[in-house]
Length: 248
Figure 1 (spheres, rainbow, N blue to C red):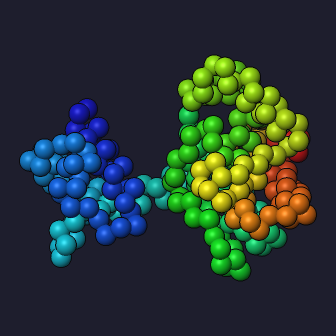
Figure 2: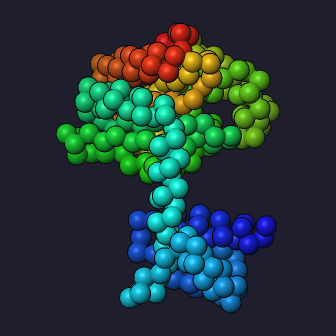
């Protein structure tokens, strides 16, 4: 069990530096708080399993392609993503902004799809697989607002002190009533997002669709337009997944 925990810690550290040229064994040792000798044995075992690769020139380490293979297999098994991707692409063309699909996973949401507009040179870049605490951002608030109250409260209790819960729950009720959520600079300063929750045929919240924008481009009319379009998309997606419940 200890070896698995250590291997996953190494993988997490390498994943956060995926856009870099890799990390040296000394850097990994420091960030994972493991002795160099232990790290050397661990990396050797992970390389054997395809979990880690070493650059022959720089001797730095990066994630192996096995993670991509597993990720693509999981992605392919998420049938609803295949069903709704045309709707995400349609929304992207309509608004010329980056479109995201998030999936709830316990106390976090995972960004499972991102479609960027080629016509918009100013993009908000959230990496696929990014995990975001459920109390942050428009997408997550849209999902919380449409979950059973007891479930959303249990999630919020992990992040917020008790005296802050009533105000947040009041906000979630308003989000549910209006059919969408908005956020401004909650994760990244200068950015905004508008989002709606998505239900499946069983009435379960399976995700949220959001539009990411640079805040200075927002006007009242632009905001109204984005809200209208994301709500239309959310309605069509939920219908495709068999839901007859009106969230919007």
